[in-house]
Amino acid sequence: MTERWFPDEMPVPAVNAETVGWWEAAAEHRLVVQRCGACGQTRHPPAPLCPRCRSTDSAWSDLPGTGSVFTYTVVRQAFIPSLADRIPYVVIAVELDGSDGARIVSNLIDIDPADVFIGMPVEVVWEDMGPQLALPRFRPATGAATVVGEAGGVSAQDPKGAQA
View 1 (cartoon, rainbow, N blue to C red):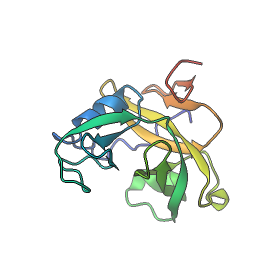
View 2: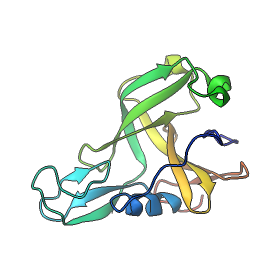
View 3: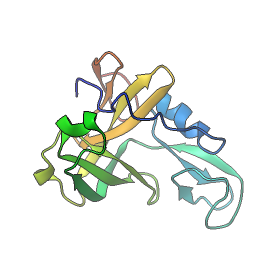
View 4: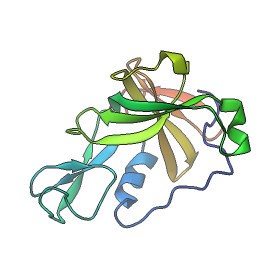
């Protein structure tokens, strides 16, 4: 991926007290989930209370940046004009490796929509929106994650974040 996928006219995601740790990790190209400090339950999206035990004690747990397609849909109509050149595109729910079942919704890029399947291994691709904001996208797993910079530069990383 050599250009930003996220259109400029899309609103920037909102940050709040529950999500700030997630966004800080994303800006560092780290994929994390909240883990309950009382019972160990993971959750995404972040929330103030554990859904299992109702504890407010939580910590951020780093993930390897890989997973599998849990479900997906192929979008064939642009909801904003700048997405028209990307039609069709794929929106996926990724079951994240190392997360005890937590899932994240994102885009699957670098693939023909006809080739997507449930259970497909995927890896994170970071889209830098600025110095403080990066968004996770996913692509079919190849063994190394990629970072896409504001200026369109691409650098390979291993899933733990070390430069390749």
